[in-house]
Image (cartoon, rainbow, N blue to C red; front, side, top):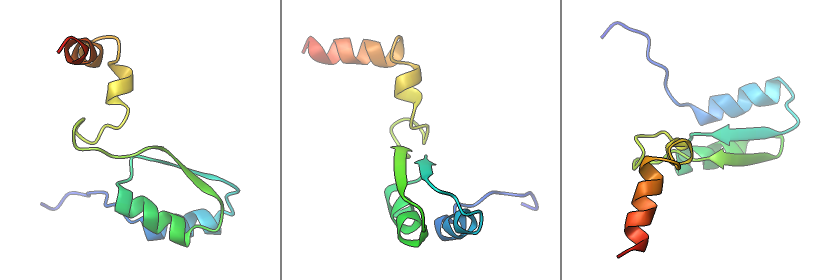
Length: 81
């Protein structure tokens, strides 16, 4: 309480990108509903690099970063079943 907390506001983010006259936007870590709002309000073409997901604690690239260790082990375990 009483501390700054950043909030997700995809409409404002799109309007800021429009104001900066971006030519292409790459979204990272927005949930599906929020990236849809960004697409709607952004003037420039937009793509998604990685979405937010609850399985990795909202760290969408955790599986990529740990593919040689934990997630690699999970994959091997799943393949042997």
